[in-house]
Image (cartoon, rainbow, N blue to C red; front, side, top):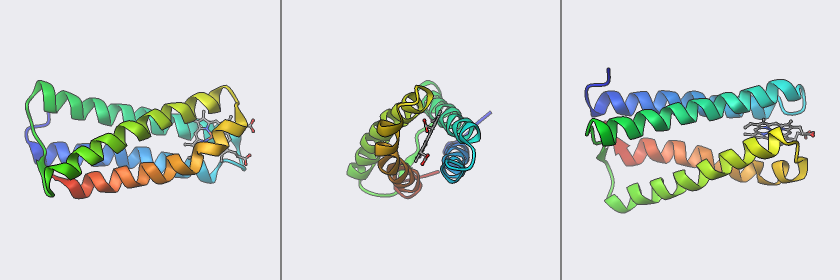
Length: 128
Ligand code: HEM
C-alpha cells in the first residue's frame, strides 16, 4: 500500500493527527459527558497504536526510512519522548478505565502537552 517515505510520513501524521484530535475533543468533553470523554480517549489510543504499528511495520519490515531534516540527535530525542508519552497514554487509559480519578487528573496536563510536543516535533524532525 505505502510505497515510499513521503507516503509513510503523511500516513503517520494523519493517523497521529486523528489521535491528537480525539484526545483534545475528549479533553473538552471531560466535564460534559464522562462516557463520551472515555470513548474519545480510547479512540485516541486506538489511532495512536495503528499509527505506531504502520510506522514500525514499514520501517522495519519494508525498509522505508524517513529522512531526518535535523541532526540525528533530534530524532533520538523525539523517539525517547515518544516512548515516555506512550507510557503516559497507557497510564491515562488505565486510570480512566479503573476510575482512579486523582491519579488520572494529576497526569493529564503532562500527557496532553507531551503528546502535542511529540506530534509536532515528529513533523519537524523528519520529512518524507
Ligand atoms: C484514554 C482513555 C480515557 C479514559 C477511559 C478516561 C476516563 C475517564 C473517566 C471515567 C473519568 C471520570 C472519573 C471520575 O470522575 O470518577 C475521567 C475524568 C477525567 N479525565 Fe479522562 N479518560 C481517558 C483519557 C483522558 C485524557 C487523554 C485526558 C487528558 C489529557 C483526560 C483527562 C481527564 C480529566 C481532567 C478528568 C476529570 C474531569 C473532571 O473534572 O471531572 N482523560 N476520565
